[in-house]
Length: 363
Image 1: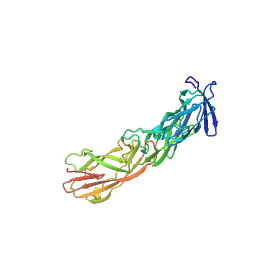
Image 2: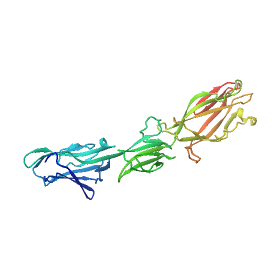
Image 3: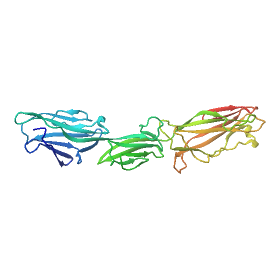
Image 4: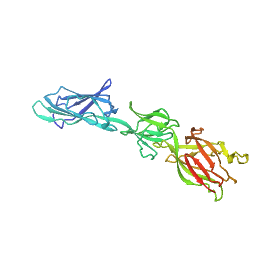
């Protein structure tokens, strides 16, 4: 058999197997049959996912001379290569995931005249081990490969190796669009859920799990005082707070928040006088979107009460709600915001407290 011998590939199908005959030209009788499971399409692609197995068999028949050796190159598999005539079932591992792995075979043949020749390398199949790669649209937090996301968060999904005919579906909440292509975008829903994103390529299905979480709590950092510029000589105290919505290992940049109305409670001292009944908290006229740091800024203050001052105070238990931007619902509740307003003594010295943070000021 010579290097110049042509290689003809004839595809035969038998149930789930695809049989390829690799033969020399008519001047030689050598023939080598390869059976690969699962079946391949017309361009010799095998579409699988990580941990799937492919069976490789070589059944030489009707040849003259002897076969000295076999060398299977099987990149991306658990073995890498084989010198067996038929490696049999081989598992494709993470080393081959997300790429096309060309399986090939070299046969060292001794012809009927005792001459040794290494036949041309035969490409057996392109084994495409598909996987889905994900990247969050939000750049904060820094880990954009995370599979834990906030409600309303967007994630770009891509099939690798690239396959423009991949079909995307989702089980659980949220949505995915477009439905076909190598790239798509998953948008988390407005409730906590465990979602499965699937890509189907010619019957092969690969999937990833996305865990969607809701806002769970808040914490505050004092960033300023007297936000309403209460003038000197006037009773009152206030502070400005950057409020962070947890958890902070996801993005809530597509979430908006709202404080509702409430009446004062726990009136004491100065404020028990019917002429000094404090007002209630007014509901915000509009929802406020969170920043890319999952934050909103609050201004808590009270003041302007006339002398003669004496010790006394009141509380607001302010309803607080969140929802995904674009929703028309009334949102979901988080813990009420407790704002406490106190006059400390007869000098009018006063303290405002919210999110466990306080500011004290004298007139």
